[in-house]
Structures are given as C-alpha cells and as structure tokens.
Image (cartoon, rainbow, N blue to C red; front, side, top):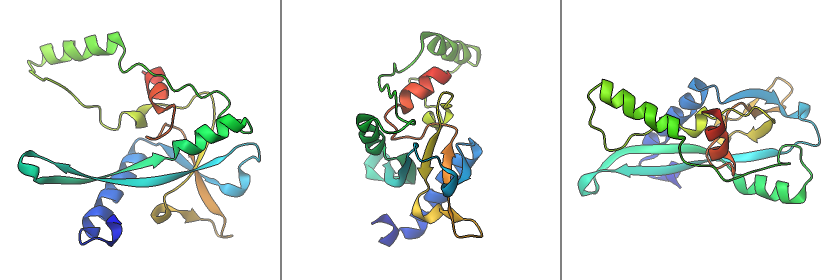
Length: 173
C-alpha cells in the first residue's frame, strides 16, 4: 500500500535506510536456500511502514522496519518439528539494573539532562548464540545465485517481530 502511494519514493528511501541498518549491524549473512537443512524452517519477513509525526501532526519522517513473522515461529514451536524453535522463551525484562546505572553515570559525566533515551536498533543488537534462524528477505531485497536459487538470510542477530527478540537482546547485554 505504501509503495503504491504518492509518497512511494519516500517509502523506498526509508526501506533502503532500514536495509543499510541491517547491513551495518551485520544482522544476516546470505545463505543458499537449497543448503538449509530439512529440519530447519525458513521464516518470512516483511517491511512495516510507519509515519513518525511531531507536534501538530507534522510528518517528521517515514520509517520502515524489517520484521520477522513471529507468528510462524510460534506455530513451528507448537508443532515441535523444527530445531530452530525448540525452546522459545518470550519473557524478557526490559532493562538490567547495571545498564540503567551505567546510563545514569554517562549522563552525569556529560552533564546531560535527559528524561528518556533510545537505543538505536536495540533488538538488532541481540545476538543469536544457541541456534540458527533462517529468514526469507523482503521481496524487494531478495537475491539469487547464478543457478536461480534464492538466497535466504541466516540471522546472526534478532529481528523485530521474533517472539524471543527481547530475550535475545536482554541476554546479549
């Protein structure tokens, strides 16, 4: 829908920014889909558009987030047929006490008076250490080898939308 709107160029630019972010954080590596073991699932991803607005409902920026279709991971876990989703734990505390204290110390040292803060691409910084997760790239970013075999993403880091992304991020930091 966003790609067919009058703002399509802005949405495509936002999608490119998101893809660049995924590459900058080294979220995935390309993996030939015909080499994915039969007992591991390949989950879909999608691009979710959002218009960020400021005071007076003024458009500040067009934002796109690449998300993992977590509902597929939950369904796979319930079936119990995939090594990827054998043990999905979805509860994750929001913040470690030591991280909060560290943030306060930095703000005091820099004489900052912040009411809140945001971690850029927070979930993208959570590293998968105990399993492999394969995902199909959004349609506009799919790549193929010379044989016509699609490359899928072997996720090194969690994507938004994964049912355990919060826990992966929390366990990383």
